[in-house]
Amino acid sequence: MVHAPSRQNASTLEQRYQEMREQVLTFTDKLGAPIDPGILETVVMLNLLGLRTSQSCEGHLEHGCPYPWVMVMDNERSRAFNRMWLQVCELEEQAKTAMTVQAYDCYLSADTHLRAYTARWEVEDVVFGQITELLDAFYTSQQTLINPARLLVKRLHPGTYRIEPGFSLAVKELPDSLKPNYLARGQAEMQAFTTYLKRRWRQG
Image (tube, rainbow, N blue to C red; front, side, top):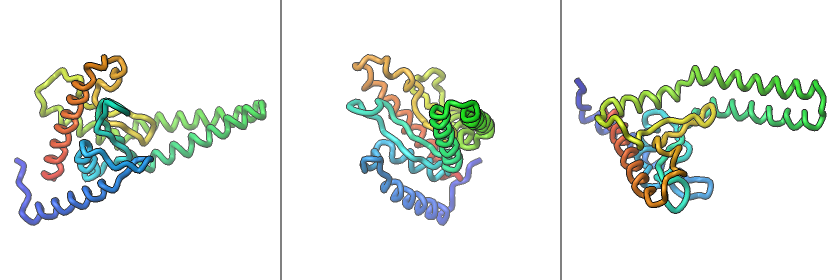
């Protein structure tokens, strides 16, 4: 049985929610544009549940992607991957300049080391597991078995994940006349997931 929060706990939850909402309202993209209102609540709830977001979009027909999405970050893992990736790129440039076995050995060894770490990270990926668990729990409560707007989590690289509708992979193949329909369905799916996240967070 899920117990309703006490009045004091409800007040504390509301305060935390408002504080996070005010913080999210300060988020901007690289061009300084504020967060889209249609994805605001999703970002607020993910952050309240301990999943740090970096970018998001409510979905647009005129520009960007015709579906909503949210980027979630594991900052420590992402920084480690980027640091190692930059080192591999630097060693690759040095190898192409030197054209020696030793230089290529350094480059290829660093690249192999990065691949090994990436494989290990995928096995030990806590944040990916947290997002997957939330999505699985949400869809366990749903009755629809076939739904092209079903939300998926995609690894972009270690420490960087994107929550988006399943049809996003085929969106370029959709006729332009159908894109408004799929955009609306993707937005509705994200809003339903957000409602679930809010209920789960409030139940503690």
